[in-house]
Image (cartoon, rainbow, N blue to C red; front, side, top):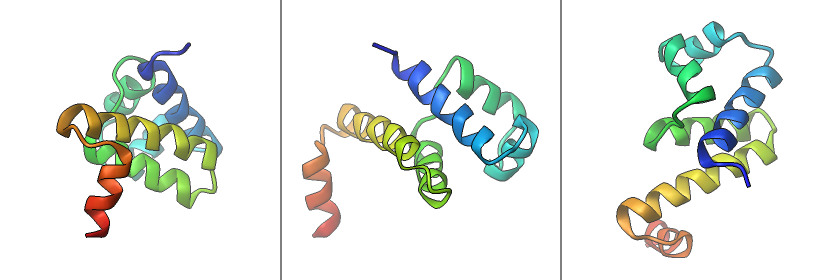
Length: 95
């Protein structure tokens, strides 16, 4: 079973390559440093808003499988940080 780091990192790399972008161009698009993109792809997955940004970009790029990886990681982070399950989060956002 792949770790969250390798799964999210592989999804970021796959999203970047599906867009036909180098790490430099992708970093420009994501408004971050090239080193940050390299780190996300290899060692340390993004968190919070950056993870949500990758989710949004994957949806916009028509990459539902990659969006699913980012969505899962984002839900896991929210659950770990705030104790909210995806269902509770959905209820909160609808209220």
